[in-house]
Length: 270
Image (cartoon, rainbow, N blue to C red; front, side, top):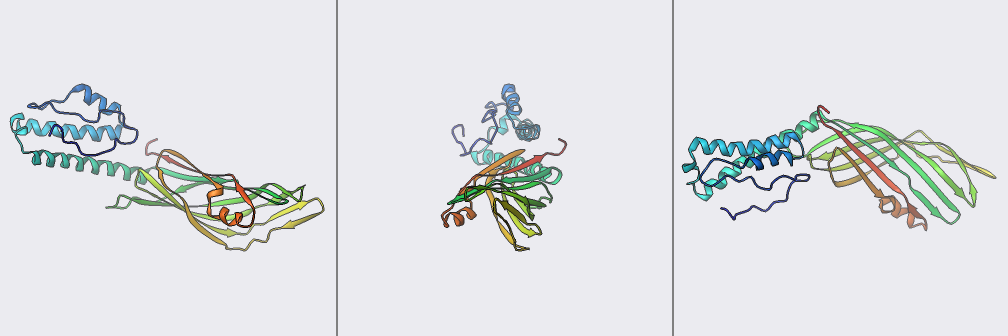
C-alpha cells in the first residue's frame, strides 16, 4: 500500500502537498502537512473540504484504535479511501452548485472584423454589452446551463471604397440569446442572434448608399467550447478562423481582427 498510487493530475491552482500521510501504527498526521494543505488550496471552502477528509481518517483511527485501524486488509483501506473521496466530491459538488445558484455570471463581447479586397477596405464594430446569465443548477447533474438575453449593435468603424474615405451613420441591431454550459470547471457558450430594425447609411464623395437588411434574420452557433471557467475569463478568437470569414474569403476578400468574449463570475458573498 505504501507504493500504490492512483493516477491523477493535481487540481488547477493547488500548491499544497500531494499526500498527507498518517504515521504507520498511529492516528497522527504531520502538523506541517495539515498546515500546508489549506495554505496551498485555491480557497477556504476547498481547504475546509480537504481538511474534513483527513479529519475523518483520524477520527476513525482513534475510534477503532490504531492497532485495529492498521491491521486491515488492503481492500478495506482502499474502500475507506473511496468513501472519503466520495464525501469530498459531494461537498465540492455542493459548492459548485452554490456558486451557480447564488453567484452572478455575466457575458459581454466585442468583434471588429476588417474585410479587405480590391478597392474595398471596411472595419466593422459589433458590441454586445454585459448580459446577466440566469438559471439554477440541475439536481442530480454535474453540468448546468444558465441563459441570458441582451442586445448587440453593429456599426462601420472605418471605410474606404475605390480610394475614397466614406462616413457611415446608423447601426444594425440584434437580439441576442446566450446559453452557457458549465460543470464549475469548464464552460461552453452558444449564441443566437435575431435581426431587429436598424440600417446603416454610407456617404462617400460622389454618392451614397444604404443597407436594407432583412428583418428577423436569424443566426446561431457555438461561440467557444471547453474553456476554463474562471472568475474572469477573456476568450479571444481570430476572426479569420470564424465560419463567416471562410465564406467571405471565397469571394477573394481577406478577413482579419479579433472577437473577444469576457465571462465574469462574482461568487456569493463577494
